[in-house]
Image (cartoon, rainbow, N blue to C red; front, side, top):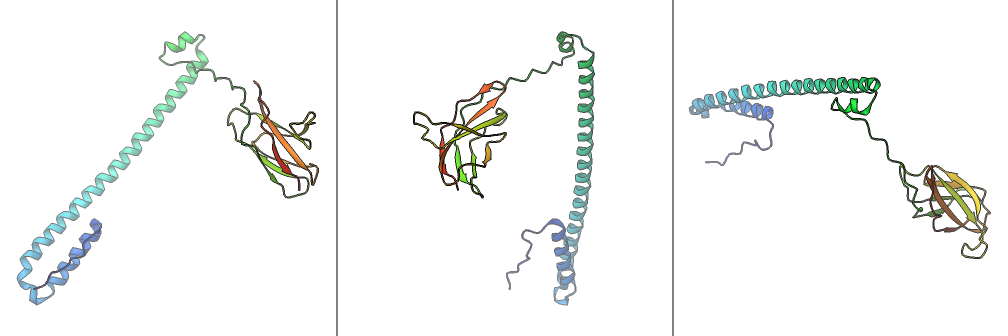
Length: 209
């Protein structure tokens, strides 16, 4: 007597059907298992029933996918039509009250940008060429229009730091060229938009290559 293993673990339904049918065919072809013909017939019937249910499930799944696509298309069409109506109402109405009466509303005016905050996290690195430094600071997305950048070769805490304009940058990452090669420089930046200018950042120091 043997403890027989079927090797059915983790099989998909199609693979299970194919596996069982192969087992039935192999077993039916061996005379020693002739007494099992009734059980093999019953098992074949169960496999056929499983295959039918799998076909039903696939048909229902495909129908559900088609129905979902149709629903999504209908939803998009309704939203597009509503957007077109809103546009026409906006062009036709003469007062906000008339818009509100349609159960729609006038879009809120965008909030004005705040004055930028003092830039933080300023870092400097040597550039690839003589007289060149690269820098970056923590960004303020949607607030800053551009950055003003200054440098000095004097102690920024001294009585006359002599800050000079270096460049402007629309991004918080920037490149500076034409700096005095071989000298230590201090760099500071401030953020600017239409509302105003931030305080200057704490200076960062680096020797220019």
